Length: 163
Image 1 (cartoon, helix red, strand yellow):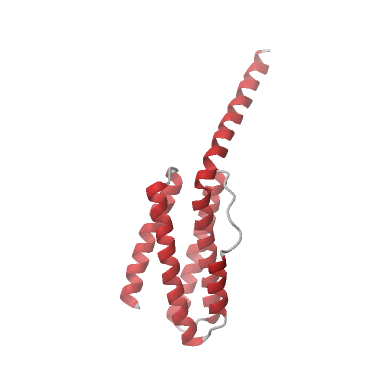
Image 2 (cartoon, one colour; image 1 turned 60 degrees about the vertical axis):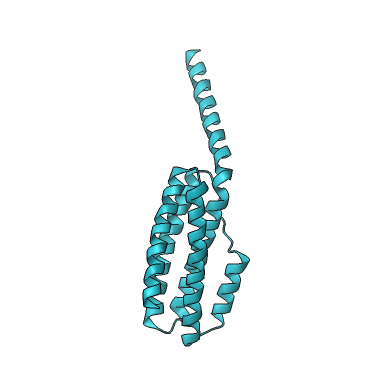
């Protein structure tokens, strides 16, 4: 009898905890999905630039983007899974249009358009993560956002100096 009571209390506690997790997830879901869309879009841009880029600078930048955004995507998937958040699998229409436009270019035209697209993507990504820092309530996601803000600010400052 005592075992049944203990088992019921454990099951009830798990259900309550699971319900609380499920209730917390929707508040953070838009941020996680937007951040993951950006990761996947920049990963796709990096892969495209590895194929179509003409300068060593762009090809190196593309390799770095693929490595970085693959790792960021995996990290964000883990954070989402821990919070029972389903991440977005599809790119935004805007990201698809940028990719399709760049796919039509080659040579130095591609390289210049790619740099502009990355700068624009980084500006949008920075705004997203700053917004999470201001409004987000989840410490793990705020930590992710802070690390992205720091990295993006450094990357954008370096790009300004080099381009």
